[in-house]
Image (tube, rainbow, N blue to C red; front, side, top):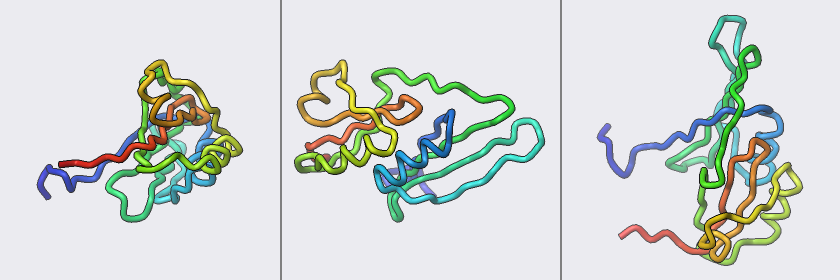
Length: 136
């Protein structure tokens, strides 16, 4: 398969608590569990949760190694931006908050003007942008 615009994207991140992360991304945003596994007893094995929308060209991979957890270290600029192409539905923001998210202001005024930023339980930021993405 060529490396081009049809290539699938995986966003991989550590998580402190996969159950809390799943609640946010699945119940809050509406992603589906694509794959899940629990690590065994061998060094380096880890718990893994992959979430995405069926048919999407991307998915989110969250990992947790119970014996040697990696602490997530997101910054204010580590963003996953979803372009809504309309006003951000306030019920979607409320659902994200009800499932472990925390609405925050962005240090970048662009995202405050054009969207809503919500931190997931690990501190990573999701931006729901009311603008559309039109790739020419």
